[in-house]
Amino acid sequence: MNQKDIFFLGVRTYSLAIVIFNLFNSIVFLFYPKVKDWELFSYNFYGCLLFFFLSMILFSITSFLSRFLKFNSLFLLLIMIFLIEISAFIIADTSIAKLILDIVTGKNNNYIMMFYPLSVIISYVFVKVYFR
Image (cartoon, rainbow, N blue to C red):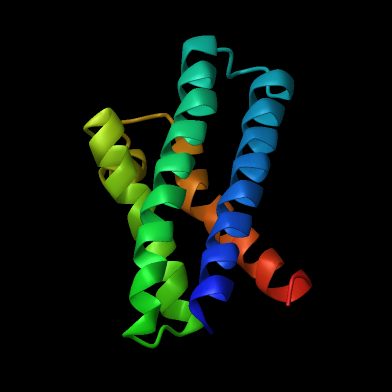
């Protein structure tokens, strides 16, 4: 892949991840009767926009390294997920991986945090399959 392809892969993946995440977030909060914490909804709605846009900017900077390094598909996906972690740490001073571990151990009930990396994986697979 050349630099231009990697850049547009990142832009398409993160843009689609924003749409997928916000659709899932809206469906959960509108149709699941036990979850009615609208402060959490707004945090995830606007947090998603900020996290993914900052990740998109960081990925565009990273795509310039493709001149010197060869990236395979799995490595690009791992970079995209890791950049969400970095942007969450920069913006919210928290770690998505730590919050997911807190969900598994029962300390946190914000299950939507698990959908941040999942939405990137889903959108990456969709972009790789349909936007060749």
